[in-house]
Length: 382
Image 1: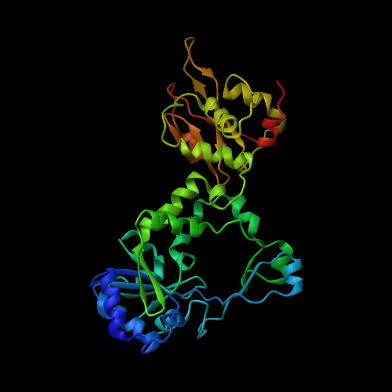
Image 2: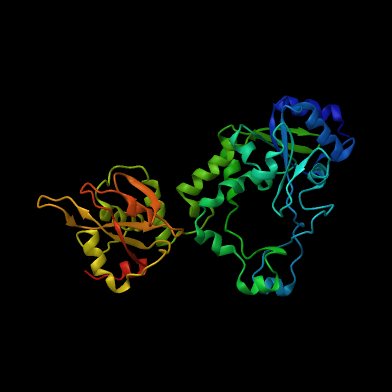
């Protein structure tokens, strides 16, 4: 049996100490037998970090994965999880987290996706979830679980390409059968488990300390040091990370985003977007000699409003020349959420309408003309 003293000594040896900010995930059963159960884990952590430290645990109001019916499988469902009602005693977070969130000195959010917090900065759980722990030197303590339980990983996933997210989201038919406010569903699995790649990278870089407490394997590491590896890989090669092939659009955007901050294309907006498409996909496209000329070539497909992801976005703009100001126009690539990546004084990202506030060397401001879908660009003949 693992005693409280054994648990305490092992955690201190790992580096848990007074004032530590912890994100804790656990499997009580992984210890084999632990003296005092869940309460021992919680009380031992509190005693070590003291009220000068903070403890955060997941408080997601979700059931464990439920068995799939034959009909579920025919619909393509791969994960089926029920949203639980408020006040549920047990969730998929495990008995330690479920016990922790119900304690009178713990702050716990009321949303389906929530965090529980205790200690000096525990109240931050109500407004920022794990944000405080992530950005203030917090450490992850994984008791008998691996990186796939690390909730903080989700906090950098906003940059995941929509094409990846959409590939596994439930269909309309699934959502009709299982309303999203009552169920958490997935349809399909990526070819590889990307988070294990990140865990392996973290081990290779020496970021993870580990030990065993009874039968429980324990990992201890700086949260940001590990999740920043994930963020960097999502920026560098998100499709490769997940074992998927990128489309032409995502290859182009990935190439363009890696140029952010570069002055190489200052004043050469058309060259920038054409290189992004051509170099990343090893193809040749045919356009005009300026953004304005290219826009005229594609005007049969020019659309107004919010540009779709991967579209070429065009503006009128007077540019300097030997013969005075000339409307050579301006252009960029839409990221699909209202933002456009484009070459101005450097490669930068701006809201597609905010670009109209920029000032050219002539004193002129870009004037939004519209966007052209990538398919039209690719269909242009020489």
